[in-house]
Structures are given as C-alpha cells and as structure tokens.
Image (cartoon, rainbow, N blue to C red; front, side, top):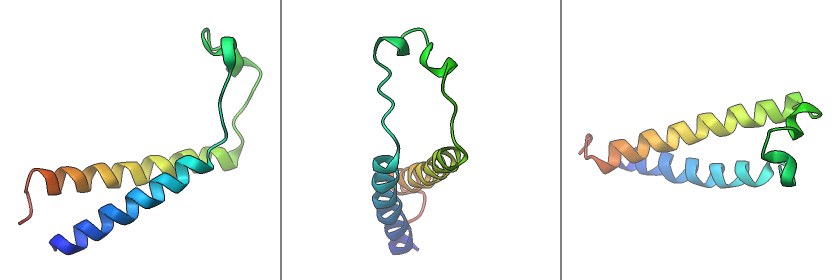
Length: 74
C-alpha cells in the first residue's frame, strides 16, 4: 500500500506540473489590482475544465502527502 501511495503521489506531482504549465498566462498588469481585468474577460469552458482538473489533481497530491507525511499508513 505504501508503494502504491508513493506512485500516486509522484504521478500526481508530474501531472500537476504539466497542468499548471498548460494554463494560459494571466498577466493583467495594473488592471489586476482592482480586478478590473475580469470585467471584460470570460473563462472559456476548456479553461474551466482545466482549472477543475488541476484542483482535483492538487487535492489528490495533498492528500497523499499528508497520509505519507504523518505516517498514517505504514
């Protein structure tokens, strides 16, 4: 079980790196201070799906880190 969790953690870490690199840059410049840049832009459905998938993979990674870090499974 320990090797399985390590494998899941490493795979989710690599997938998380790839998913974060796939995101579009959100450099709003000075308009990002007052969130004025979001007034004129909308998220596409593909980017929403990418954000959701990134969040799920990040959650799996964090859960694996906590399980392995605190020694819950020996």
